[in-house]
Image (cartoon, rainbow, N blue to C red):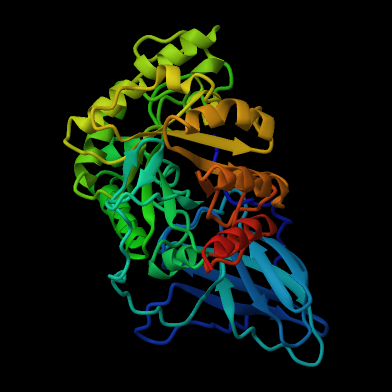
Length: 486
């Protein structure tokens, strides 16, 4: 996707102040290290109503959006609130962050208030959950990743991905977005948990691969990135997540998603020179260094796959397909792109110069949706481990069986083909069912976008909680993967 959606953050309703205070804190036990804490207070009360408050502290990974839920046991009903978007369904109350206080970093707190009615008794809620995680209880002890996972070392054999024994391997799984945007926006490294339980939840869907979008400025630790989220800290976090993915038997696909270079032309994602959106092509200034460093870091791990660049679109800047495909392969000075471009050949060369022989995948034009001339312009790979990447959503141009038959099948007959992103923006899975059937019939790989708890109406989101609870859209992928590997 060009713009990974942030959590939907809603507007305030206004504030009402009351005199009087009867604060009832609900907090963790002495010495506990909960993932989050909530202090609940009744700051004013009268015959039929009261004013309440909550203070939420996040002690886990930084959150780009927060949602607090709790249940009233005494029939209380929220009528209005402030500093959060308040709603109630039955006994369950929800407070969601605003656009100005939605980000909640590690150790950060946010306070909000509300007015509600009561009768008979007004007991405090017993359980609070922040983005599905129970607060005010001891965190589970940190445990190392399990050691039983053995993802295969992969290589290209003809038009197939195979393991060391020559057995064909398909990459079937999900994308885990967050590493491409959280760091450069100053909120953290991952969007939501990436601990062992969170990675196990992916494996429980019977996924065998996880694509991990990255940010080149964060990896390289450039000055516009907070030190705690860049450079060595970022690299260590990526290595740890890749290790956990592999510990559960899944293939990590490391992918350059956001990159440096100012582009304000047709279909520009942003006007910023920094890596804060999808650019039409990788930049010569930093992208080769990024891939040299990534390849050096993972070259001894033959299970890791390298995805050179998320969604190239030099075709939106160029006036001809020939110019666009030439730019894609060779880089340099490209029509309509003001910065010096690193072509796919430059990036292949950067990876191979380190001695890394890992499988490399490269997406085509039109945000990786057009592979029409991929084989004519494919880079030269001295290791012979090059595959094609393709992205497809229901709103793309090439989103039908006839287009797949005419443009994808010839590429798939020549090299391995990996659909690094599949999805739809309908909150259902009718289109992805068709994609998976076609790719199954052709023995090809695919990964759903995305394993994040965003509202599926703002972007294809597979889950509503990091325990693997699927959205209606995600249920289609989950059930299909489980059927393939019961």
